[in-house]
Image (tube, rainbow, N blue to C red; front, side, top):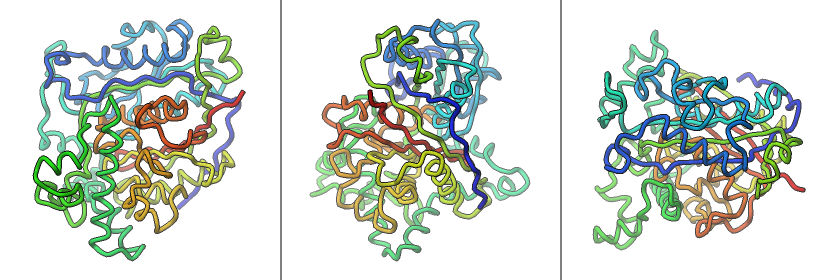
Length: 433
């Protein structure tokens, strides 16, 4: 593994506004069927501007992220098509796509643009119709995407010379991280199963308190409805079948539709650019680490996370014990366990115990994915990373209501992962007066 040496930013950059739509199945509801990409992106973008106390003319540039623009929008340049919806027609923009890591790189791209000095205030947003595709030759209509059709698009992720000829790359072997964790830490099959089930239970508990989450009924409630005595009993029943040696259905993403956005600004210009209207403390982006291994590399998610985590700790000087809250893209639910241990947020080889004891739920002492993660909040591919950031920012402000964590977080780490290739990890901290 080759570690990249990351340099410090040329100037401080802070998050001043966030926005997020509910994660949903748009075509299933008459009230949302027909929503366009521009409307979804615009909702999140305008909410982020309102949150910051700025208007579109204050914003210099915007980034547009989408994991699968070919299937999702039928545009070659989707960023250009939507500027009217949030008052930025004519302003320069860039489209980018890093699969399910797009929303995490969305922040990195915006911060780089401001830290360089080129721009003072930048919007970065992502939108995804993960549950439906645009109907060709129709201006706005969409149709549901069956899983078999969705899985065909994953072939675009892999090296055509090797992985595609094998029909799939290692990324689709969802049991890899679970098998690796079990083997290297000496867990029994039953202990690994318990851990996976409790991750799902905790995620759903968190989502049950989140008004934007797609699934809000707890597994305790579901278990009772089906005549079980407890959530864990239900989780190990045929209602939650295994999809392989370890992973169960509850540990796989719920693909859906949604959009999210963030507004970043040069820290020393916040007062001027927000016209004194911002009602909350800015949150400084201390640093970002990135890694990438394509799917022919064994345990590539683990290796790339190790690299990205080392980079961000090195450039920021932050220590693992300073992290108050942790988020990880867990469309394969094992991700938030392995990522949290690599980051030192949970102790090496002991994190599974924290999960089974409920300590990683929103009301525990080591909260992870307080919005419910990809298996309960939902997974609108590109938008998910910024949805995590939206939740994290509100936790750091202390305004999450019933799901507010016990200790007001000052410093947070978020780890993105996607596309059998990309890892992006960053540390953010509330800016003190």
